[in-house]
Image 1 (cartoon, one colour):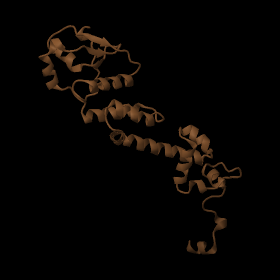
Image 2 (cartoon, helix red, strand yellow; image 1 turned 60 degrees about the horizontal axis):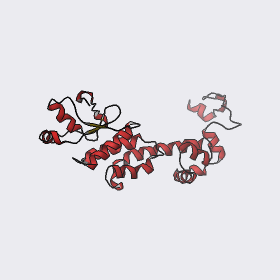
Image 3 (cartoon, one colour; image 1 turned 135 degrees about the vertical axis):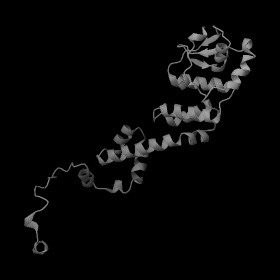
Image 4 (cartoon, helix red, strand yellow; image 1 turned 30 degrees about the vertical axis):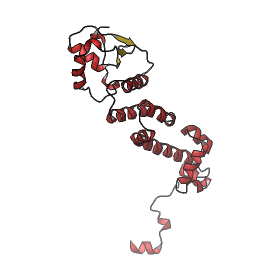
Length: 221
């Protein structure tokens, strides 16, 4: 493949930065370097440093292997796996950056099971991965708890809330128990909070109602 046809997408490259020392090292072994790997759109999955060496040496062609991917997340996961399998290993900063990027792109319902997959792809412990993505989890939990509270105040039953939020009914029950006395509110209180009382009427009298003034109030005036 022509070196000019190769595309280097920095947003999908596992490393935070290119390593100049590695490029210099490869210059000496350019004729013995393995092929680079690209996707169907000629984006480099593995071999950025090898490709840079060929460009630096003025070579117009480079041996390539083409691997089809279905989306950017699959591309990035494959690139991480290739970097971890051989050559210069990813740094902890590289892995943390990739973990946050991939985890954030997952649907909230997929994230729990995805932690084990990501920790395996990044060759790190699950505990370390959980620390890296803890801010994302905290924000998601706060959002979910807020939605549960709003739905409960709107008189939805626990199963409906569970279906809408995407958790189990037991989880909803647990969260409601932790919300300050929320489950102890009467149905009338909950209806009042949403202005749904069947006999609710807006008061018609003014704030300053002369008929309600006492003689004491009048004297003060």
